[in-house]
Length: 249
Length: 163
Image (tube, rainbow over all chains, first blue to last red; front, top):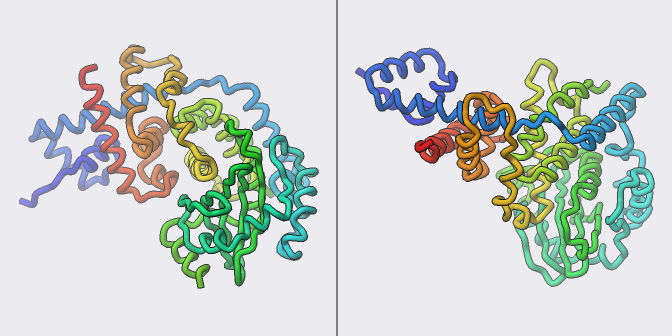
């Protein structure tokens, strides 16, 4: 008689009704003969019931009015835009970003101003990376680390602490990386894309003194920018490693 | 033409907030996450296939949004005061069958689980996703979902055995 090795995972899947029939029947037979196995299955059923009860009790049906209103407004904006067959400007500032077409450094200031005016959600965010800051972002040591550091890693550099956030591959095959450079006076979130070398294509600076948590305005802007680039999902694991090898050539 | 997902989105808000709270353990931050995730979802409504589970699609967007957020922010400060945050969560509602005391005990046990176990537990046992659906939300193999889930539930049983 072949021996069925019943792992916890199999017993749990049985308790959850996730096992295919021949295996489920086999588990049921073992359960009938072995109280210890039956006990484990009952425990898995119990833990599911307990968890479900806790989650049911955590379901607060009263979504805060502010949140509901904000989301309803988003929905209306999108539905109106999709009727008019265009996307709202908030997340698709496409026409405002004739990027890549111009030498980036020259276009930067103008583009930022345009987006800031169009979207108007910049309290607390300083959108004008003066020439000095851009030079810092394009410091050779920063650019070298961009070809090496995995996402999530940090490096202490003379110009500040560099943290690489994520890696994307655009439809044209080029690799872009989002990163953060923290100096004593300011923190800058930026994107650099690589053709023959790394070029900083986007940067958002916030003064360090506003240390408290800033919810999402900056993140949204970065999202909008990455969305506009067609960045898609970040590369992970091997895909990222491969992109970095390309980038270090 | 964008797929209209507005109604479904609004109906899903309470569950999105609940899952966001599992991820970040802070109600104000959870609401920010929900709002950001909704914005993303609306921007790419076309990528949802009608007829598939809308909730699983949204949970995935929400979780990816959270991960991006973590990558951008240094979060140690936020995660530290789990103790103070947990009391936000145990709002007693219509808890079926169990007493509030027992519920609170299970709640504490869940809070004590590692993040990767808590989220899979929330998706499968709290939100009734299948293993495969949870694997897609979490972007991990089904086998990983099963091992994390089994560990989480064994631990829960141990911790609440006295209840």
